[in-house]
Image (cartoon, rainbow, N blue to C red; front, side, top):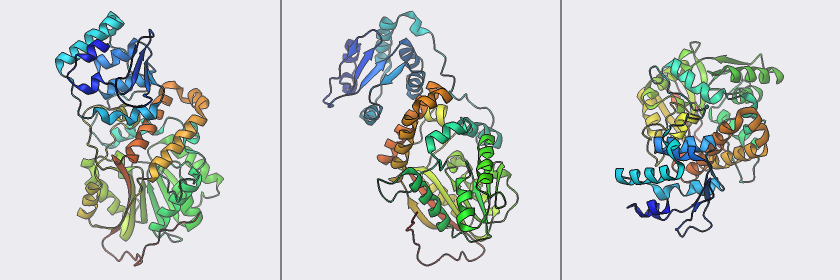
Length: 418
C-alpha cells in the first residue's frame, strides 16, 4: 500500500498525517511532521470494500459505523480533516489504489457489503412534505427516550446551552438558556406561548412554571410527546401546558402571543423557509414576538450527495446562512429586533454531551447498540469541532410581527441568573 500511495500525484496522500494499521498487523507509518500522529485501524476487509464501492464520505461513514474502521484518537483524527480539503484522486490513481486493496484483501473485496442497519434509507415522496418530514425527523428523535436521558442529562434539553463560564454545569447552562428565551420573548402571565418542535417539553414547562403562560408544544415524535406529558403531569403543570403530536403546518388554533422554535428549523429546508415564515406569522397575533433558535452555515458549503449526517443523523436536514431566514421573515411582515450568536456555547454543550455518552457508554451500548453509539460519538465530536472552527454557528433571532406595536423596551438586558 505504501508503494501505491507513493505513486500518487498529490503529496498529501504520500505523506499521511496518521498511521494506518491493518487487520493482519501490517502498518503504514506517517511520513508527515504531525507530532504524535493518531493511528487508524482497518479492522477487516469491509472497511476497504465500503471505500471501494463508495469512495466518499458515505463510504468512510459506513466503515466507521460498522466498526470495520477505528481510530485511537477520534478528536485528533478529525482535526486533521482540513489537510485534505480540495483533494482530488484521478481515475488512474483510484485504479492503482483499488488494485492494491484487492491484492491485500482478495476477491471478497469486490462484494459490496451491506450498509449498517441503522442507516436511513432514501425516503420517497416530495422533499419536505409533511409525510416525508415526519419520517425523517422520527429517524433521529425516536431512538429512545432512555438514550436521550443519558445523553442530555436531567434537563432533557436538546439544543445549545448558554454558559456564563467554562466551568458551568450543563444543567445550569441549559436552565439559563431557557430563561434567556423567556426573557427575550417578554413572556407575561396568561399569555399563550407556542413552542414549535417542543422536544420533551422543557421550554414550555419552564415558561409556565416561571412566567405563568399557557403553553402549547408540538412535536412529530410520539415517544417525545409521551415523555413530555409525563414530565408535565409530574411537575403539576397539566392545567397550563399541552403537548400535541403535529407538524407545525397542521396547527390551526392561533393566534398566539409569542412563538418559539428551538433547534427545529434545520428540518425545514431552504426552499420551505418562506412558507415557514408565513405559517408562523399566521399563528402569531399582530405585534407578537417570534424567537427562532437554530444552526446556520458560516463558511462551510452545502454538501453534494449523501453524507454521514444525512444518512445516519438528520435525513433531509439542511443548514444555510442566517440571511436566508432573515429574508424570509422580512418578506412576510416580520421585523428582526435582535440577533445573537451562541457559537462558542455549542462546543461547550456538545463536549458535555460527549462526556455523558462516555460516562454511560456501557448502558448506551446495551440500549441502542454499538453502531448507533459509534454514529453519535462521531456526530457529536465532529459537530463540536465544526462550531469551534467557525464552519457553522447557532443564532437566536427575535422578530416582531407587523400590525401592532411590539412593546419591546428601548434597552435589552441579557444578564440571566440561575
